[in-house]
Length: 254
Image (cartoon, rainbow, N blue to C red; front, side, top):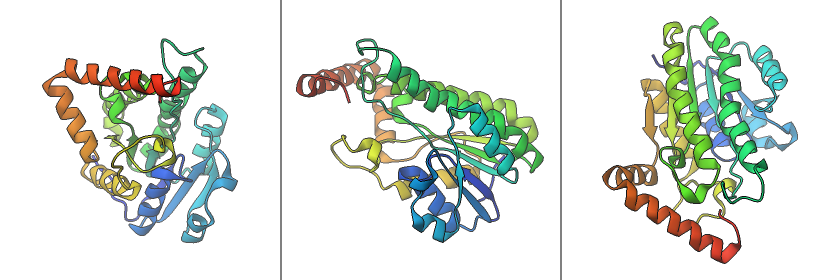
């Protein structure tokens, strides 16, 4: 099961910036027939994307009515890229309240589930197609300094595998992207080398075309997953040290 970019009709959630914008651009340049750019606030979609041919769709993945409306509007889709995400930059157990953790789960897990449930019949009717879920290395194993973001992305990873199994009979592939540190607004607080969003999108679309189940998209993701596999206890201890160092200097984890 796989899908090619050329001739596809795609929808990218959170397509107005960062990795989502890169997916829209790569799909357009790769020969997609139509690319819907989903955004909670359509006026935040850059004019350059519209000029390049992107079709703007108002879409809040946490609102079932908004998702259902998008599924009706974008009934010709053959590719869905679930990119919209939220990192609340707070602790989990020691957070002042659970609001941010709930929001992260609503966007990063239930938002993806909402999209898959709504668009699975659309993709099935259009020949199967493909779903690409933009996830995180923080969801591949417990990451203390990522607070509620880590468990929400872990839940989405499990969802990806389960959805792939459930949708296999209709010919729909599901690819989970394990992403490391990328040069986006979400990671503007992270120091060190960051990947170009365009590279993540290119690798993600190649994985989709191959029908890959799970793929590490960049060096950080590959090295982190390898380090965890070799010595998970040491990796977890390093994550705790990183969290505590950040807490001492800023008053909260990031």
